[in-house]
Amino acid sequence: AQRVTQPEKLLSVFKGAPVELKCNYSYSGSPELFWYVQYSRQRLQLLLRHISRESIKGFTADLNKGETSFHLKKPFAQEEDSAMYYCALKRGGSQGNLIFGKGTKLSVKP
Amino acid sequence: GAGVSQSPRYKVAKRGQDVALRCDPISGHVSLFWYQQALGQGPEFLTYFQNEAQLDKSGLPSDRFFAERPEGSVSTLKIQRTQQEDSAVYLCASSLRTGRAYEQYFGPGTRLTVT
Image (cartoon, rainbow over all chains, first blue to last red; front, side, top):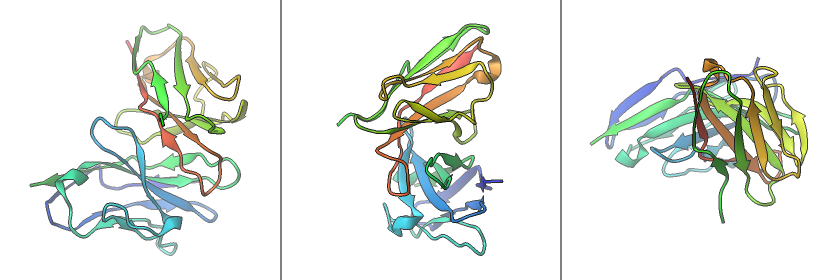
């Protein structure tokens, strides 16, 4: 079965500390993985996708097929990073709907 | 340009009432998705349109849920005889096409509360 697991509901760190939001997936095929972010009172928006191998707002994520993980990392957290973060898997084929994890709320304290 | 819009933003319905939720995708976007997000959960897929064709409705939880996109732009999600378990945020997303290169853009959602 296709599944995305985010084991932490809440992650609290101090400003300037490193942050890692965990994501594990289950998928029989070549996965396409994303991180979406939802800031307070804003809509869900794409943060980054694994195929782009880019860094957005200082965040990076590496796909580890051996561990079936796609953890989101940032070396120095900022207060404005506080938000809900969702890891998502895109189904293969021509359709492409997303399968989301339950989300992790990141709180960055001053 | 304008992003995906949804209306109403909030809807309170008494159990047993029918509701209709509207989604205006980004102009020119071929693909349209509906998701349901229960409290404390991630969004879950309901149904998918490519233009006016509903290509997948495997996520619709019951036959009380019905979606349409008759002219390939605006879409309506209808829930008949609402139940308390239907309370959730309903999200609409659109993308220019399907496939790896195309990002899904989300609307603000409609929060449905069934009392």
